[in-house]
Amino acid sequence: MQQSHRSADLVRDLYRQGASYIFARKPEEIAKEYGFRQVARLASNENPFGPSPRAVQEAEKALVSMHRYPDTTHTGLIHALREYHGDYSFVTGVGMDGVIETCIRTLINQGDLVAISTPTFSFYGLAAAAQGGVVRNIPRNPDFTVDVPSFISAARDAKISFLCSPNNPSGTVTPVSVIEEILQNITGILFLDNAYVEFSSEEYHQLMNRYDNLIIGRTMSKVFGLAGCRVGYAFVPDWFKPVYDKAATPFTLNTISAAAAIGALSDHEYIRKTIAYVRTWREIFTKETRKPVLPSGANFVMIDVAPLTGDQATDFFAQKGVLVRSCRSFPGLADHYIRVCVGEEWENIRFLEAFRII
Image 1 (cartoon, helix red, strand yellow):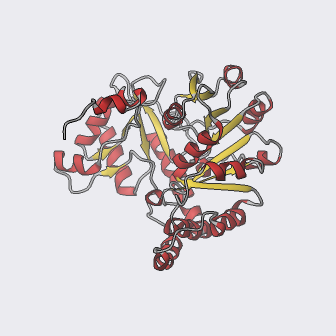
Image 2 (cartoon, rainbow, N blue to C red):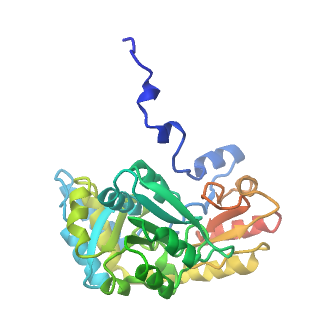
């Protein structure tokens, strides 16, 4: 059949111009290219222990109901979140990404301002632009702390602003007092991304009791070990939950993933073990790496590999059977950093051995 138009003309400018999330290389590619049976996977901030046994048990029980649509309100998961965190309002989504996307869809009209503290997770800007938002990036200070006056000035009139703590990729932790100062001086929503907060010593959810313009995003992918299940959730103000539910895509979070999340939330020993292990190895990485390592409250560290670029360092480690993340794709970040997460013990040792000869 002859086409009467060029199909590319149908695609939005945003995507014709190449806007997309940049992924790390696949471990299978590195294994094949350099002849490794196993590659140390230290690029994606995953949990090295695998899923919690309780998460697996609950997921297996839920398999028998996979022919039914999931509970759209995810009553069981919301109850488990309240048991774990306290009596707050929660929403869920397919990963933190799904929660972010739905929050933006709930709030943003064409041309609305979205403020982002950068360098940080690129998906905030991609999702905002996809909804027609106008993105304003506010650079952090040279030490990657938040430039509070600049952020407040830029975010004051924004419909929604994004700040990540601990920040991805720097690992920087923003104190509760700074978050509170921001909340007191803006009129829109602050979306505080807490994907890695369990590995830090900071906690923010008590702010939900004092501010109705705060959303705290969380994920089951990191400390809970459910990256493949794609379960995200957020603390939200009471007024926001009903409109979020209207904007959400129906039947997104599946039954098996929700059940696994319920099991994971109940396995406190698994959570404790993961946090202790990550903190121990994060300190070892910081002490034994012969390059500047940024202070981190996450399950990864960001390392300045100058005079190499991030891509050059990533290629070097790939040749040694170690997959790390070049930070070149993070908006506003100089191209001489890599991000390395804590993996299994053999993976961490292989990384350190490779670093000694870089």
